[in-house]
Image (cartoon, rainbow, N blue to C red; front, side, top):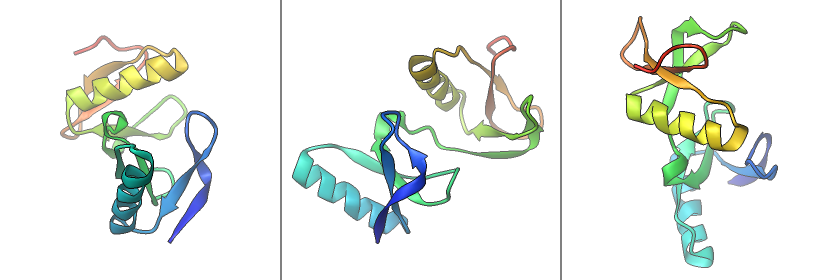
Length: 120
């Protein structure tokens, strides 16, 4: 079953559609492709835990790093590859005008984003 999200919003301010499972989200993506010609892919939202749809090129899968925190004390996102971290940094720069660098996580296998570290 799909419903409009109360907590997750697209960059245009519209709520994402929430799906309970990856299968439901894949069915939703197929429907959007057939009816609107848009090529969307499912992703599991790290904020709400539900499934949403977005263009494949915007997806940068990550998980929460249990060791590293940001300046506010929130756990950092951990990207599997430096390329995924760079793609997310580019998206953030385009949408918010914030320049971020990537660096290798000192505790786990993966990459983080930071404002004040040199790119590695």
